[in-house]
Image (cartoon, rainbow, N blue to C red; front, top):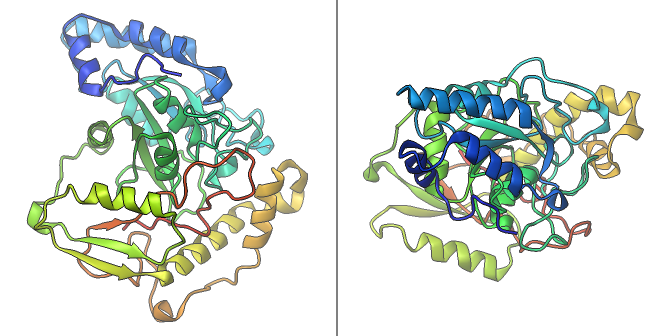
Length: 379
């Protein structure tokens, strides 16, 4: 499927809006027309609320009030992020009927930038998985082949962008949940530095590791959204960038690794780089995530285990067996940081590794890529 926004960048849309060649209301209409229910990208569509926001955006632009590059642009939001007046179901029967009283901080920032919130997108239950096919609302389906997984946990957001339903979507990323579905759906996904986009109003997975991230067709569009959401233009000078390749995180199919290395080959040759071997970070990540996630859900596991998806319940019960404070030898005397592994190399600003260890697999297969066994740790 090719929706209206396929091949249209945020800059293209902004030029058309400001030149009068289109309107926010017209862009919303194109977004609604582009939604393919068969791909299950959206769990909630707020046509009425979005229409009101589009009218305001058009009125403001006509009056000369321009809020910036997202003004009048349709945006989708992952269904663990609160949007006032809309359900936040988190892919779980446990939160059936829950309606958010207010906007998450990141959603408020989108509204302040003039964006039009189209609706909420499918998430792996409680964002606790990397396949995107474990949810009470059903799997999000890869637009390149609906029989295959979208990746997760921000699968619906990736599908909505990849299929051209919207040009931009919000997701969350703890251990790959923006980057994995972006990779499998063939778009760009960006997990920014810890805390740079606020997580207030976002249901947690593991609080010391959770990030809000963005998904778009191109890295440039991710950068545009990031700057709006952080009100920041901070960029390191070229001499301040130090890259590292992460070794030993998980087995990676040879074609996937070649593709990543080919992409890195386009970077300037004089950038310093180092090769790191970080199996310790993998074990620390898994221990932190297991302990924090089970602590969050322990009461629900005790009270209503039958309301979890079976795969989620099984994973939570495995997480319950992780000893509190579990760590690995290199980190035994260090305090884990939410922004940096204690095993990392000082001064590294960019860590590089594949976002998925294998190409997209059939939906429902037992060989899902897993944030537990293949974390992507980004300081």
